[in-house]
Image (cartoon, rainbow, N blue to C red; front, side):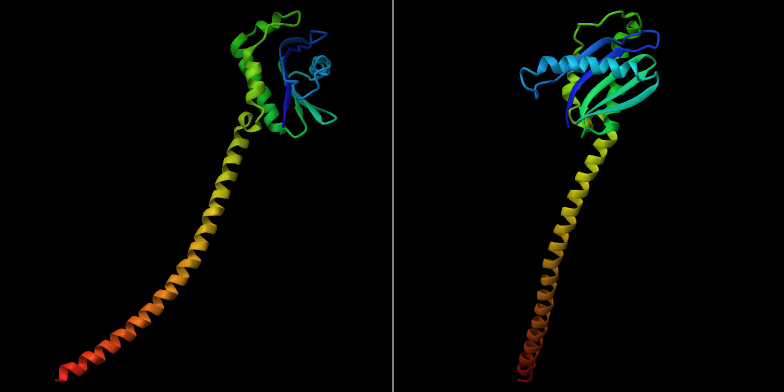
Length: 199
């Protein structure tokens, strides 16, 4: 599961071409000579998908082994480039968080943007690395993963109890044998003691 790029764009219906407000990408898994082409492709596809995502809508576009997820919240659009294995719910949760953070940081200034921003936004680069694990973006997925781990521990505990139970059973058998031996010893001791009391 890999996130290649995250973009925030102004994709209001009144603008002809979406304006890139923030852009972060990790193209290190591509060949050195492919990286600049991949970045250009990300910008091109990001703009295209953002322009075709209506306000208050979400959409996912499949391209080979990648999915491009877009969420347009009233003209402010977040676009994520993920591989095919990244969970869709986590992707949209991440895009929602990115839009929330952008609005907290910049308010409504994005509405007046006319051209692409070349200013780096540190949060987007941090989000790109932090959310490589889908559980960070999706709390339900994180809880599900923790429940699965708990279930594994629980199964291990039950298995160890059963194993211990088998050992306990053998101890119980031994103890019943011991009590039988103890009873025999007691009976023998009683017989021997009764012989001595007559004298």
